[in-house]
Image (cartoon, rainbow, N blue to C red; front, side, top):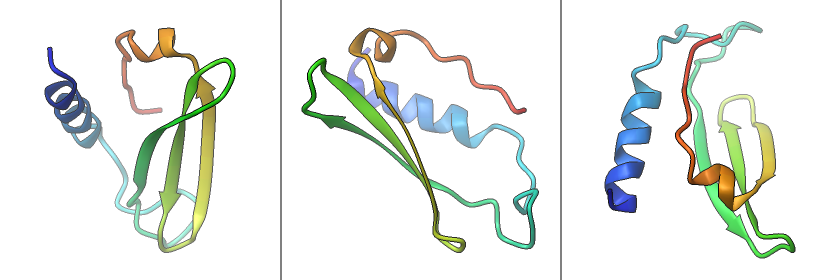
Length: 78
């Protein structure tokens, strides 16, 4: 599978997850932006950036090792 098709599939799966119209903490829309970025580190890896624009909340996860990026990720609602 090519990376563009894989990314589109991953985004579609993410968008289909059930979600509340507002975040649990208050009257802010449950709307997020996310980006997976390769950062030149030793060892190599990527970072996942999550941003909630209305609250300006930013969360970062990583580095994510390349081996983990090539594995399937099961998504579920908590």
